[in-house]
Length: 282
Image (cartoon, rainbow, N blue to C red; front, top):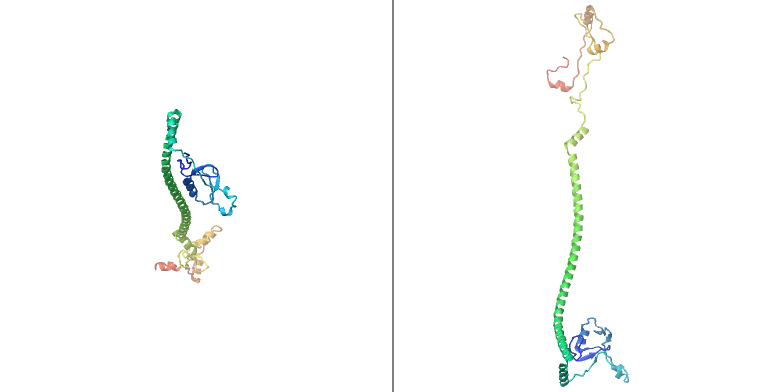
């Protein structure tokens, strides 16, 4: 009995494709249905040659050509040997050495096919689980990537805002420092010195002493002693000429005929108000 290349088992209701390969009818139907993109052209599972699954409307085919029109998937009828023939063949195989080895090899291959069929189901389930896990990981990685991009944008915005706030703080500190420097005692004293005016009543800025009379008469000595001029005149004239002595009679005469001149000093009002003991004419 021929073996199907899809289910790896004996063919059940075998069908043939245009390329000549045969499969079980149920296997080829499942293969066509598993293709999600529905199309009328499908490849052969073995040689990948295309075949058409669309039915042919015989009404449009001329009657003389209808016997030659066959569908792409055709049913095949294989001859199955009888049980007697099979038993005789087995006896012949057992009787001969090579036939016995072939029979044991066939049994081993069938056992391997059964094991592979069971393993295929197990590995199919594992593949589905693996695909689901990978899909979940892919979605999770995409979400993490999007979240990282959002966090990076937020970080850049916060850094920009932080730099602007730092600049504002520096400007405020500089303004406070400038105000403190302007309000410091040193700077205020300097401004006061620059803006204050001279006080005419202050003792430091009082006018200098001056004599009430511009003429400075010489003092006469009544007893006949040498009469010197004032210290200022003496200092200015002693270097040029010697002091001249006067006679007693001249002194007495001038003393009786001349009215003595009283010299007074003009003092600022501050000195007059300091003490009643101060007399500018003393």
